[in-house]
Length: 353
Image 1 (cartoon, one colour):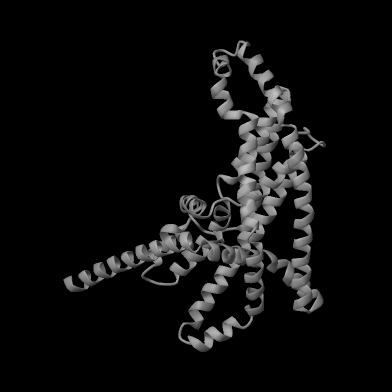
Image 2 (cartoon, helix red, strand yellow):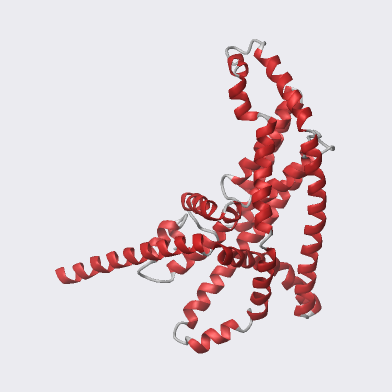
């Protein structure tokens, strides 16, 4: 009995050591093989993104070339026109930064001389206010994110090459794996099917909610609404940053809120803030959970840790694609009895295991 207990403890220690070693190897690979692994991860994410519309077109046309060609061509044309409009709006925003700065200094001086029950001391500290909400810092923040995303999109040629081979081999790789590893085929098929279902649910719900939230935000701060400088730019940032779980939507909302309190009257700025918070809560708390359901099943703490890790090694692109990758990792760990406890610790709800 003691020998069996000792064997069980040794087995757990061996599993823990193996997981730690694999984790270290993966971390080093993420750093040193970034130029290869990041485009591959993006290609896999794009594959799951284009798969639902491709399947719909395929059911209508019956031709894979037509379905994939239509989706990819539509994606490229859409990205081209968005890039042109984004560049024009960014240029206008940079041109209006001096005007925003002047309004910022005027508001700061006005509130510093007002009776705000002690809060006027904050506005009297020019250095503190400049660090927190100066237009130059907002501009630097936006340009830093766009610069990171620019580097992200420079790898698109490599991404498209990976995506092409994924598409070409999606129907043959299963046959080859079954012939090579007949004993592991059923387990691998289960992992692939569950991963596909979870990633597709995540991608579809995230794209839908990010696009919906970005569209509503753009309307709120556009000339139709409160007419803020850089309204289209902040809408695009909202769409992209919302892919970062937990913190992305918050970071996307901060710049337009700061500019709103600089450029607008206090009442209008508060109304705009309430609308933006309501928009974020509706999509984040109601729409997205109903679309994705419980298929993701990752603990918020694990998700946050993953975002921080991937953003540290891959920047903004890593923060965006880290969540789908941790979903796949959890499903793989769940298929082995020795690593299942690790998967359960990563899960948001033990009952679903």
